[in-house]
Figure (cartoon, rainbow, N blue to C red):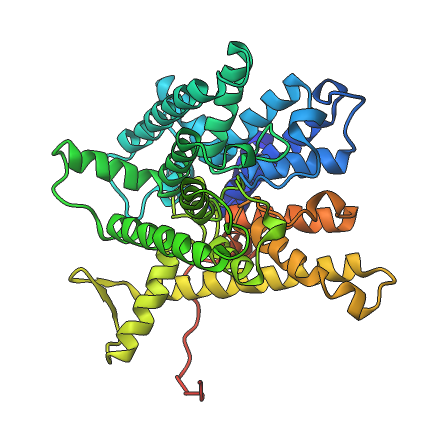
Length: 457
């Protein structure tokens, strides 16, 4: 009994909410890697463990980067395992376990409640369990609708059973913003297909705006909630602006190149699709390797921004981008505070936003450097310089849990694969969350000394 109490006290002292959150994803990745490494998961022989680990990390972190061909190299069981991994990764293993305990009539610990509240909500709410149940309800509804629509289209190309399986796989992958596909060329064969494009884009956007936004929108539509929160309004407006602006610039940069001879419908759909998918999902309907440098830069920016908080996506998030722009705008107008919709954003939130942005940029710089050093070999600087864009694109894609690639992923060596795995993990859990989990747990706010100014700018 004493040993049990000591173990419980040790866990209580050392496992802070950020550490529990980190360990849940890390454990899911390792378990998934073991299952994918076993012979029954591969179509022939078995995967190398590093490839199984990479695939598991990409699925759990809902990234979509692949070093294998999921449709050819994985068996049916292996593919089903990836479905469970990116479904669990999209919502979080703690979410599944919490709902299970609630359905069994058991409560959850204070730490568990704290983790889940910070994952899905911008402010603490009493109807937390109602919102949590709605997360699963929305997930089932949207994935079912997506499966039905994709089945209608895929049934023209495949037998009914195969079409249904393809529809389920791609619908779940899209809603969780994963981007895993059973087609070797992703969705390039459906570039001009209206039903496939609209269905996948709809799932991506709905999964990427965040579950609290979904809940508030439906609550307002049903008349339960009078107005949307500042968070939801920021997410919806920023998402709409990024999609429309991204589509416009994609068309502008590619109108005389990749889209030059494409039909009008293909041009519109390709521009919209490539504007939506860099926001944390790796589906593509064009060959990324053939894009112009200006378009690649556009995609890098969109991947860095990513989806919204409390969603299945990664990146610095739409709200961080909006708050940064609002902070600059308010500073130019002489306001010390960040104001929007007759509300003032807490300084702690603004400070955390700046920390997230710079920590993210720093993480990407480190991983890109590792990729360059590990992949340089005996090449001269001039010979290896063209890899810089590919490695930078890969690092940002991994951080944003996007999954788009310029074709370099299968060519990575083991050291580079480990670096990308780390980048995907950091992108999914967040650089600050990872930093807090590694730091010592302290109580109180610490010491405050006399202030002294420094020159900036």
